[in-house]
Image 1 (spheres, rainbow, N blue to C red):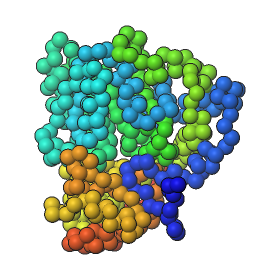
Image 2: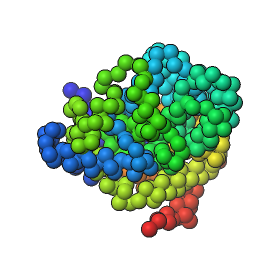
Image 3: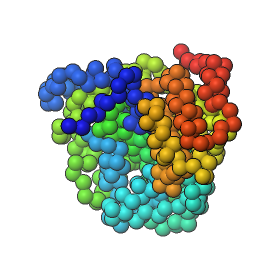
Length: 402
């Protein structure tokens, strides 16, 4: 039998950018007895968490909750708004934008993939002016949606979604704005209503601090109206039946009951702390980690400081070094898991997650494992990132909003 809990002492350091560590409080909530998903207690739970999740997306409109991964919510967003052969404009910011584009092809859509060229293009965010220029060319309005990734987990870049909305509006184009914030929600600032997003896609295993298995579509009134005539095949993903059942706190199929217990607990934790405080500590952690990378004399994967991710930091290793070998050393010697480079970034960098159930000392220990591991891998470091991060956290305490 495969032994999954093989760590002899202490806790394994899971510092990938998702799934993130699940707090004991959430694990305890998930361990409660399963109840009848058609009974009155479950209906009350459903209504409560459906209201709370709106606050996390910063929306007054419905949020659909699926028993699925974020990939399922990608498909749901497209299946409910598109018809076969529809054209969608997608921007390449990294590996996950690329996977979403491949999904669009499989769904019999016609995705147009634009972006900056090569690996260097993955070190920047969405270029809103390129979207605006392309939409102005589309005078017949054949493009039905613009799809962008908010926080690109593969690169550590958080794109400016408000700028994308302004670009669509400046072009006078009716395309829907569909945004993936699977890794950004509850870690990076996101405003579904204010930024004019029509469908927001997210998942449970990142800033919400849950295991994988829940995903979301936050909707706009325009998206709901479009869904009434969209012709892509859908059954499980269909919004209409879910929205109807949700009015009373239920689902048209069996939902992931115990994960919803955990979601309700996670929402309480986030809202009790205050979402602005949650976002501020993520920004602070990210700044501390970047201070360490600078002290090491290495490059951050993201080249634009304006779109540094508060969720993760990509660390670029010297060209002669295989980043995956560095990760292997760190895992085997220090019981620390780091994110691998994906797609065009494979072997060039590793990713440090700093999201969710974390604190200053968690990150200091993580940086210590990275620093020791890189030295063992033969990387010559300029200085101590651990000391630099300690100094940063000590000098920059978190100021919590009331």
